[in-house]
Image (cartoon, rainbow, N blue to C red; front, side, top):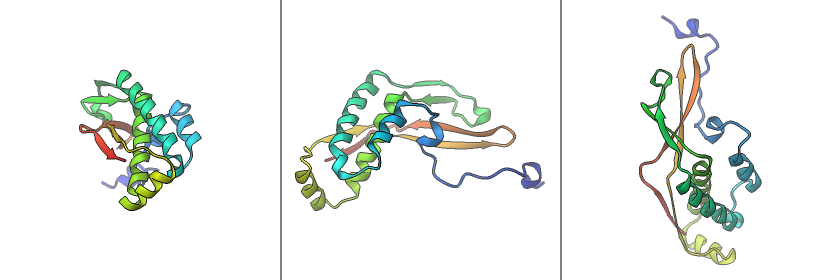
Length: 153
């Protein structure tokens, strides 16, 4: 049996799954991330302020587990994050990306230049995955990490 004959228009997804696949528009997540633009060290203080704000909100507005539809690739207990959690995670990932883009010495110099205070960032990363269910379509799911990501700035 050849899958191409049964599902001739099927195209596998080859790029990584991101929030853009998972979250539908409109959303405050896209508004805030869009206003920031591409992450840059000069924006780190703004990103940190937003992160701290949404990390606090995420603790008070956590997502929820619901019974998942396993037939279409969901977990038995599927996690559905809140927008506040998604924002904290996406902003945390930006901070992580920026902190890993520079050596310790470069980061030390940049922190002085941009007046970035030493601090520890902690968040639960939300990742995304997809499942292709032949005859039904492509479904995207979010997963919350079991352990916090910790960044020392």
